[in-house]
Length: 48
Image (cartoon, rainbow, N blue to C red; front, side, top):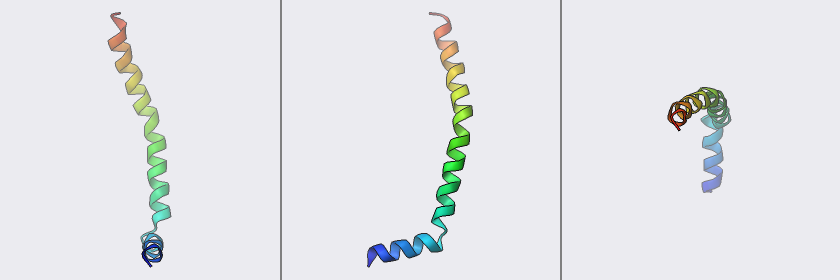
């Protein structure tokens, strides 16, 4: 019955909506993170 309770709680807590929100924010945070990584690597590797 643990699985049934887990599914019920998932539905009641709108787990699908929360998962979609996490995916959305993760996807759109990749672009600034990539820009930051390129800038840092550019500064570090510029002297070499």
